Every structure is written in C-alpha cells, then in structure tokens.
Image (cartoon, rainbow, N blue to C red):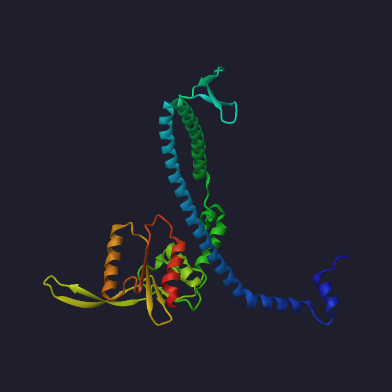
Length: 331
C-alpha cells in the first residue's frame, strides 16, 4: 500500500488538515517570490558581466594568435630561403677517447661515410646549421597548423554568442530578465535626455548604461562601494567669442559619464571615450575637455579620462588600478 502526502500528514497531525500546510507553504512562497525574482535577475546580470569579461579575453587571445601567425609565416619564408645554401647531409660522430672526436657525414640516401677533417670547420658548421634550420621549419609548420586550427575552431565562451545557438525561448527569457525588472529604488538613473534608447546595458545594481565598457566601470565602482552617479547633470559656464572679438558667457549642461562623491565633500568626474577612432567624436570630446578645463575640471585634479578605439576591450585591471590609486586614497 502506498501512502500519499495526506495520509502521512494525518498520521503525524491528526487534529490538523493537510490543506493548512499547503496554505502556509503557498503563503511562504508568495512572500519570497519577489526576493527570489530579484535574486535571479541580479544573478543573470552578473553572469552577463562575467561572460562579457571573458569575451574580451577571448578577443585578445584571437588577436594575439593572428599576430603570431603572421610572424610564424614570415619566419618560415625566411628559413626556406636560407636553408637552400646549407647542405642536407646526415652528421655522425665517433669518439675514440676522452677528448678525441671524429665527424663524418652521409649524403641523402647514401651509405658511405665521409670523414670531415679537423680543418673543415665551415663544412661542419654548415651541416649543423642546415640540420637546425630543417628542424626549425618542421616546428614552425606545426605551429602554423596549430594556430590556424585555433583561429578556425576557437569558440568564444560569451553569453550572447551562446544564446544565439539556443532555442528562441531562452533568448526571449534573457531579454525579459534584462529589460522587465525595475531597477532598485536606491539607484538613480541617467539624467541625460539625449538618446535614452542607447541605455541598453544593465548593471547588477539596476543602473542602465550606454556601452559595455561603461558597464565594466560601473561594476568596478560598485565593487569598491563608491558613491557615484551616472550621467548626472553638470552646469558649466561656456565663454563664446563673437566675430567682433567680444565675449559673452552662457550656462550649458553636460552629463559626465560618472560623478564620484568623495567622503571629504569633493567630486571626481570620470569620462570614458569609447569611439576615439572616429574623427567627429574626437573633435566633440576635445571641445568638452576644454570646457571642463575652463571650469576647473582637469586631470589629475578632479578628472579621470579613459578611452578605447572600439576595437580592443577595456583593460579591467587598469580600471581597478585607477580606482585604487586615484579614488580610494581620498575616500
């Protein structure tokens, strides 16, 4: 005879209904539902960041492999040219005492040993160099095959890349977790009204940023428990020179990528320029930095500037060193 859950419950608690147990269990589940959901969302975002960092590492590995492949091919080409001037012979050595050695060589396919006289240093050297070059060519060819195989078969272990290979339901679930969960009330979002649709990347604390590199900086600032804001409005004075030489001033609003509040009441601004390979972007950035300078904001006083060209991933260890050396000592 098989006992159901209700049978076991009746034997253990004869004066209580099993429905009350299910009811309490349901209530407990309901109370924890939001906490559980938020934990899942946070874990999802942390995993995305971890995979993002791994993808940056993978890109670096592939770039190093591509550069190494070019060097190996150049080395092979040079060795193939040089190896023609060295004889392809098999070297033999016989010893007839502690300090007495005799060298012989055989031609390819030949059986007869030919003695190398002690005065024939050049011949002995050429045979030795030729053998070294020949072996080097074999090793380089194996290296080229191994590197080409790595480049052709290496698969980045990145979150988004893996999602593309999974059924569509997983992609939809990831998008839902990324976009539907409201950020925590304690997180103040960007005040920049321009192109809010570009705020596509969500940090583990719920803050939405515009780029993957800004996401990395956000996570590092949070990891060090720093008080900061993303794209907080900053009023600055801009001096305009008229064609007649007169100057007038106006108030403009800028939105530094990160505004970091130090414990002594001072403020440090952090700008990350992520498109420095584009001329128009560089021009705008230089004008903004000049405006900062005119308002007393410049490195190393109270401004941190990092940049990339959009091709190479951000150096995470460099970001941590910046925080440890330029921010933490004043917190």
